[in-house]
Every structure is written in structure tokens, then in C-alpha cells.
Amino acid sequence: MGKLTYGMNVSVDGYTTDANGDLGWSVPDDELHQYWNDRTRDIALSLYGRKLYELMSAHWPTAGQAPGVPPVEAEYARLWLAMPKVVFSQNLESVDWNSRLERGDVVEVARRLKAETDGLMEVGGATLAAPLVRAGLVDEFQVLVTPVAIGGGTPFFPSLDKWLKLELVENRTFSSGAVLLRYEPVRG
Image 1 (tube, one colour):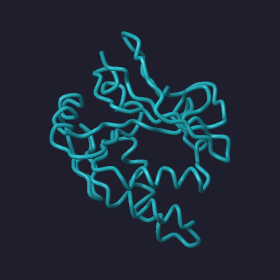
Image 2: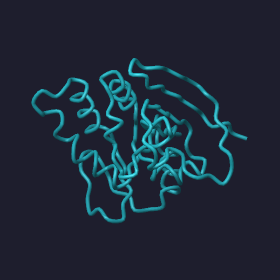
Image 3: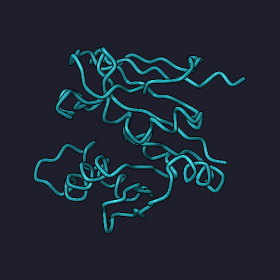
Image 4: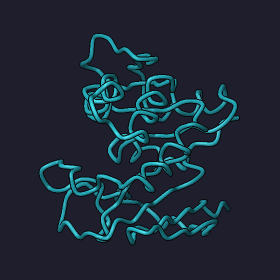
């Protein structure tokens, strides 16, 4: 059975994007980028919503060939292209780059994929993660707190009907001042 993780860069005030949907505040330095590269290398299957897939697929397929691209970014481009992806969308007609399209219920499909997948899975994006968090399907949260407050936007955690108790399994401080907080839900 797969282990479903949800991790993103998060502002110190808890947001994954600002009020305009901008991620520019969260661009990682080389050390943070290497962390995400190492994590991506271990992913057996990634779940994407349409918006994040379109953002990523507009950049990463050619990013590795750009003149002067830093090695850490070229490495991520290769990893992203090779990583199997399931894209949830009612609007897209097709997807590329080792991706397949899924139109079913996110929670039902994620349950099935967890049962069928050996290894780590990830859900990308707060909007797609929200129903999976509420359904109790996320096995690990990786909150990479970035030292910037953005004042509003899309929160990392969705609104919840009940408390979600978490156990800290790792913390790590990066030279940029960003802090990784890895949590697992306390079950039962």
C-alpha cells in the first residue's frame, strides 16, 4: 500500500499561494531545491490538479535545457519529467510527460491508487489535497515554512470539521531560515 504525503512551501502565516495565486515568494534557494529534488526522487506516483499541472508543465519540460540553468534545477526537470503523474481534471483533453488523466472522484481514486501503489505518493497543491486531508487519506504532512508573511491566499490546511492531531516526526532548519516540519496524523 502506498504512503500518501502532502508537502509544500508555506508562508510563515500558513499560505501556499498569495491572494493572487502567486508562488514567487516561495522560490527555493539551492539547498531547499535539493531537498525537494531528493524528495521527488523517492516518489512512486504524484497526484496533481489541473492548475498545478498546467503551471508545472509550462516550465519543467524545457527548464533543464535553458542556458545557464543551475544544476539543481536541471536535475529537478529530469526528475519531474520521469515521475509518474495522475492529473485530475474535468477540462483538460490530454496530458503529457509521464502523466495520465483522471476524471473520477478525487477521494475514491486516491483510495484506489494507495491500494495499488507500492511506495511514496504525493499530492501536489492545496486545493487537490483538501478533500484528501478531510478524508484522512494523507499519511504525512511536510510543511516547509518559509520566512515570509504574505497576508492571505490559499491555506496549506483546509477548513476541517474536527481537529487533526499530528505527531512531529522530523524538524530541520535550512540556512535560509526555512524550517521543515514533518508530521504524521495521530490515528485513533
